[in-house]
Length: 410
Ligand SMILES: *Cc1c(COP(=O)(O)O)cnc(C)c1O
Image (cartoon, rainbow, N blue to C red):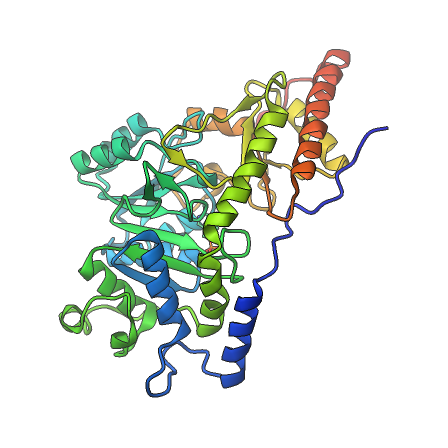
């Protein structure tokens, strides 16, 4: 009998009871706005920022309405101007180029390697060709590039780096938390990320002027002194009439939900690692499948799993994805002609200048992606891997029985 997986790839864990209690307290007193405090009260949002700054070892932290808002705020804090080129990964998710476009700047895409990290040689080519001064580096799906090599190159090229850590909250490179290598680190607390407040985000930096600009940009009115993980008033004095208010604050309700989750990040990382390793072991040796090697210095959070089907005809990949779906295994294929759900790729972002990136096209044509929510057990992961191995074999058999016609060019 063919087995079928019946779990949900989109079901996250519940909010911890401490977060529910804290949220109820905020609802009961009604002061949801971060600057709505009574005498002597410190807002949940200000406490959250202080605690998250402590967690990643940053001097300053600002909580925002979303990860996308954090990236746009970071670009504005760096004073990127309309029309200015901003480098980013060709393999990332839509909010990344979207943040660049939201300030009227121009995304310039850099090729991805077979290990799903940014191609440093192409980064240098694109930096020189475009004259860009900023790289919005996306640690897409949690794959971290060689950060010493990247920062060395960016320093040589005069590039400031913003890290998009939507998939690397809790991850490290050579012991340094993701988001602490560049000038600014951005995180998301959207439901599918490593902490869940529905929507939300953070920005961290050690640079006092960038931090003050970010706080003012987020919409602090003249109440910035109520922040705790922010620079002193003297830094704001010089900027407060110059920086526009682009309202994108976090509120105390979400902050209350998030605060108890910081302490859970280490345990979540360990549990994700077990699921990730289980999937890796289950798929090892499957013919036609290339697993993504994880560098020794990368301390990753395995909240999702990727593999490549190098050189597979699109029709064969489509048959594999459909076969897995029929057995309850939801895969995302970044090579499909049209984006589905979250799988849009650089050529779909038509507001950006068209670019030809053959290496990225080749990698994404065979890139399969799946979530590994913490509601999965080790048995679930083993079952999913068994189903995938059978479907890989069956896609290969079908190929021999009825070779597919060459796909129409699109
Ligand atoms: C989720 C995500 C973001 C930020 O998303 P928001 O939904 O705005 O919080 C940024 N980059 C990547 C790669 C993401 O997946």
